Image 1 (cartoon, rainbow, N blue to C red):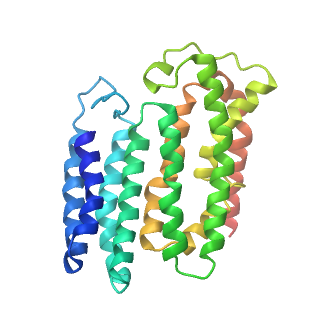
Image 2: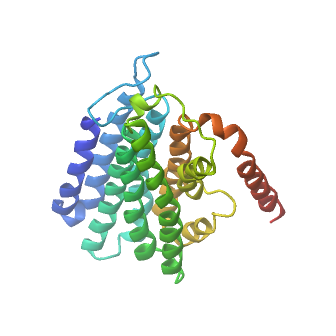
Image 3: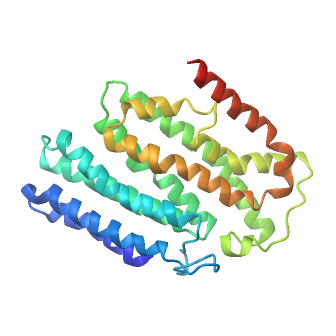
Length: 276
């Protein structure tokens, strides 16, 4: 993990120290090298599940493709942004590439995290660079409004997840993905348990987004620059589905009863999209 993460972090000083005329070519070449190196993650030993284990991070068959996608997205975003950002002052260009790089760092740490609290912190940290990219480099005058929608929908959705994780830590004694799968399933019979179930999934449903909690997404996509739209569509929305798959192992007995309202919302979203 660190052989990709440390070079990605070191890309930040490289961006600020590179000469202006070589800024885009240097950062593009550097990020391409990182992207090619990330392909080594795909070479995990079959059947063992977790690979590249460090004390806090690991890859498994679910997170590996998303990690590689994240690494390949940075050179593509740099390629897509050079044309319309190249005319700005040099420090703004440096800031723009730095935000894209920091977003890659947060996403690698989110997809690689084996601890739920670390995943939650990185899940929230991706909000900051995306918000700055949308509000500063957005296309239309509505970009501040779009950034506000994006910020408050995501924050309001993820606060119940934090409370749910604290309750889980209290009852199970661990938040490590490596050990949570071996803890006995919770009873989940009272209304409080059902609220806990909803709290666990709400942040991911807003991030995906589910019909009804989706109003931030059209605004964010329309107002974001090219790189912002790319990162939103390619990785940030997948983060919602990834988190949901990770949480489902702990919520199992209750999911069969409580999933129907969300299936109905999702199908209604399909109908509404088709009508439009």
